[in-house]
Length: 67
Image 1 (tube, rainbow, N blue to C red):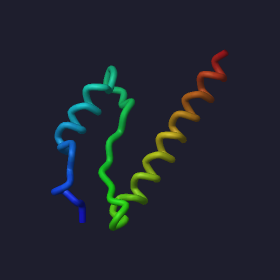
Image 2 (image 1 turned 45 degrees about the horizontal axis):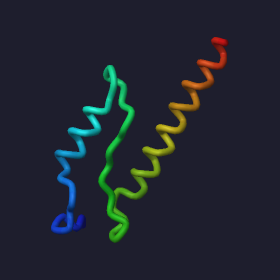
Image 3 (image 1 turned 90 degrees about the vertical axis):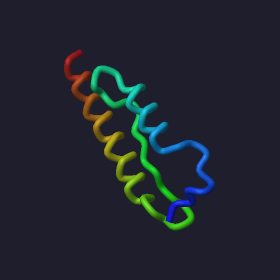
Image 4 (image 1 turned 60 degrees about the vertical axis):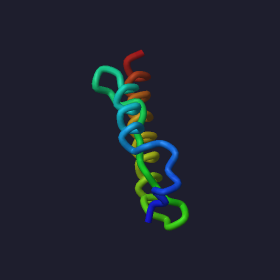
């Protein structure tokens, strides 16, 4: 249950902005809707954060190996 009647920014606007801020097909901003009231998508949001962290760490490892 999302509280859509209290939405300040429309979903389409957030997707457009995150796509616009992506550079060369590489995503630099990820958007996910979640609801702390109902708990909906909270686990997905944390999973996404951990995934992005893991990817960034692997990129940094590769960069450090090339030094």
